[in-house]
Image (cartoon, rainbow, N blue to C red; front, side, top):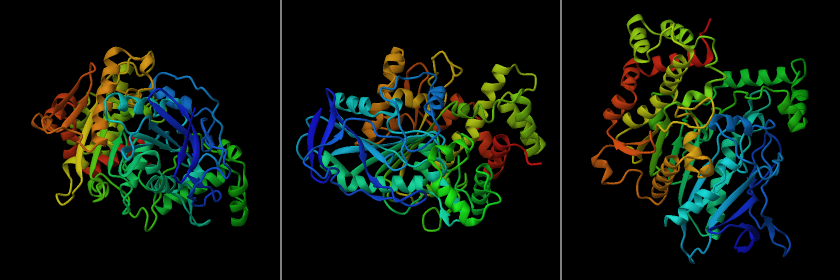
Length: 525
């Protein structure tokens, strides 16, 4: 353990490692009540001379029990949890700060902020697969030390429910993170960090949240790495969608016959576990349109302009070849996937367009289940992940000052799991954050280190692609076989996506969104 006197937070006792010290369970917000915006915790954290104990993980924000199992299932392997994760509506709003040891005075290190995923309903900074300690440790070893930061934020209904009837605007999950970046500007310098050099990165729902934050007018960070998610994957809900979700919640809580005041009382006073247990485990929450905060729905047509604000110096956006693996239980578990996809395609597109798409993805109603599943995953990945990347990069407003780079992850998962052989959703994070090293093959460890070094150089303002590499192309490809390559965008689409990006781009953004929605949510009757 190490005791540290922070200029604004007071005396802190952190957990020491050979190259780093980690300060856990630091309250960064005051909880002002359910469905209410929080306020910044100014510090100090202890009212006495006794150091604040920051050696133990803090509680999670309320969520379904064992939500970590969903995450482990996506990665294909479980990690041991050293402590039982508790949940607390108020104390769940905590932050973990991981700091290199022996920081030189006034060194002002770059800061990296991790935004966890989890369908917007589960996740936390105490989950072992999201711990930044090993990542920061690697940064020290390669001579590019950074300070790692991970905030918890409100999830599910407490974090995202909007209702006209109850005057709830939603978006508390996003606003918690906005306040987190404000907390950094006040306090990170006391840890040796540079509050004017912040790089944010998030994956899946964390990437969607980050993509939403990039729509704001207020500067929050300097660079962003948006991994396997964007604002188009779960667009901000319009008022009618908010009301549909609200009425689903009211029905699930048996409040249909209740008055407005009774509903407000029940939603505000129900125990969090009772509230969560009565709702679908993966309830479809997300950001809401809110005047002055999130003003527009981001589409494939508008994604480039809406996610490249002038205050973000550089944006990196990327995907995994089989990102749609995360949709398996909700979309891809049809008895005959190919038949379902072909029906959606033929019902959405004109005959010639339908034939080109069916041919591009080698779909056949007679396909064996294994081939059918992989082809369908690749098609849904291209529609929901790859296409937004292409629109972000290729349709950028020429007046934008934000540099945009892209990557694609092709390393196959080799764990003994359902994703074996696929570059599945979340496997990139499994390599990048360095928490699975003891479970990985040599080529996977090397690729993870290559990924981390590129990201750390990005955090140091060196660019995602070096000047030398730009002569090779403008697309970073991680994998297969543990290799990193830089290629041109046409070469990448032809060689590694079989020209499918161009096929979808020719359909037009409206047609592609309609097709993706029909596959994901079912054909409208």
